[in-house]
Length: 227
Image 1 (cartoon, rainbow, N blue to C red):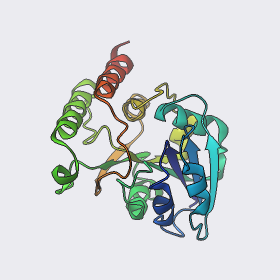
Image 2 (spheres, one colour):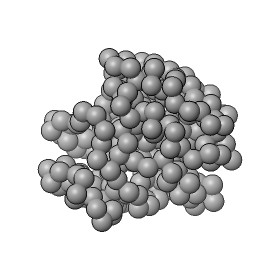
Image 3 (cartoon, rainbow, N blue to C red):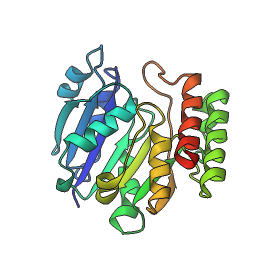
Image 4 (cartoon, helix red, strand yellow):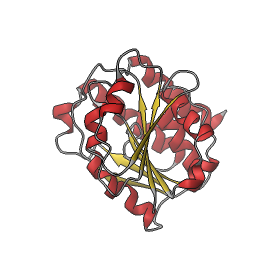
């Protein structure tokens, strides 16, 4: 199978080179960096990364926000060229070497979407603040109650998708409510969802999430369920 890695970026010059160089080969054949108009040297750092045997392409997203990065990829990339897709944050919090286990359920026909579960990682409390941990737990429980399916880690930044999901998902989220929208679309459209445990590390660079993003995520869950 041909696997494509999606890396949404915004001011990730300190981490993007390492993320790309840690990508396992030949598991991934192409990497697409979708940049949100970084004000630093993210694009330069991307071009300096060792490419191994895969291709690395860059595109600038339409609009601003992580959700718009995903929508831009859906709209502008030829989705017919690959069998499965992986998306992870480019801040070194996720291990690209776990891509193998992320795509395995899709390759084996067991799932259409795979969500990396950080909250099961035994060292999570050492690298995630209490406020962030509790917020993630609350949002995850809320999603389970509203949609009758436990996502285990709603706000994870590590995902794998089948081509069929990417081609049909109607994503409306523009910002950090993207992950909630991915989950709600999968549930509403009857796609098979699987969660697998992953490791999680302290991020490199400046934290972007703000308290109001938690409210935005909750609103996305409510809006997609009831409105």
